[in-house]
Image 1 (cartoon, rainbow, N blue to C red):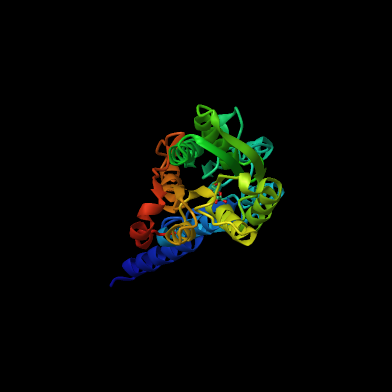
Image 2 (image 1 turned 120 degrees about the vertical axis):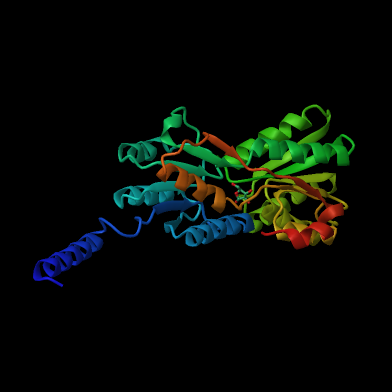
Amino acid sequence: MKRGKLYFAVATVCCLVILLSLGVVGAAKKIVVGFSQVGAESAWRTANTESIISEAKKRGIELKFSDAQQKQENQIKAIRSFIAQKVDVIGFSPVVETGWEPVLREAKRAKIPVILSDRAVDSKDTSLWVTFMGSDFVEEGRRAGKWLAEKMKGKANIVELQGTVGSAPAIDRKEGFEEIIKSYPNMKVIKSQSGDFTRSKGKEVMEAFLKAEGKNIDALFAHNDDMAIGAIQAIEEYGLKPGKDIIIVSIDAVRGAFEAMIEGKLNCTVECSPLLGPQFFDAVEAIMAKKPLPKRIVTKEGIFPQEVAKEVLPTRKY
Ligand code: AHR
């Protein structure tokens, strides 16, 4: 090779090495996503976290994951830290509906798109997020109400275990359930209190319901399966038969609910899918590719009465 050509080849290789090390050419830049999770309050939440983390890994996306332990201030701190780290996209599942505007405006000023995953925020300024994906919680409440009204033939004293105070699923499920129940004059909610979506709180509040109302209770509507499972324990300890003396309908359709149905202790679970990882990262990739997204993406879900539990359990993924 002539000396001139050799110099040229060496110079080209050197330039390439410099550009590669600067990240100017070569492998596409890794997408970086910050995700602020509510906590680990239920089996549903654990499955949701697993779905987000495993999907990021599968797609080679760098995920900065933060668990807020059910505290809004921790979520706000996490979102501020994602902004400071200049992530490409922020995702979060808001523990409660209100109080997000200041931090979401900070993300908007930093030009970082936000995806709401699973739960909505209450704000008129819809420009603060790109899309909201997750279940229709009002419809879940309606499904539970319709099933219970039919099962009880329009007559029941009901106790209600609500989810976390101020959270979208607690507000919406209550609304949907009441919308159905109000057309049955003999279906009454005699006690209603938050069990914070946890098994331990569900048990504790059910104990208080039983102490106050005892055998006057015909049915329980629990805003999630974990609280229903906690309540089942309280009912048994009280000396009644859950699923027989007290008819129980709850929401999520986690494996634990199917096991309780097979044992005859729970009567029906309404599905709320936590497997949002694929949908979430489809949205992230669409944002990065500057593709338009709908403002609302609704998850498709079903309802499972006790009679199908044995057949369906082996197919459940969470
Ligand atoms: O936001 C979804 C709800 O949050 C689930 O129903 C509940 O189990 C979880 O904690």
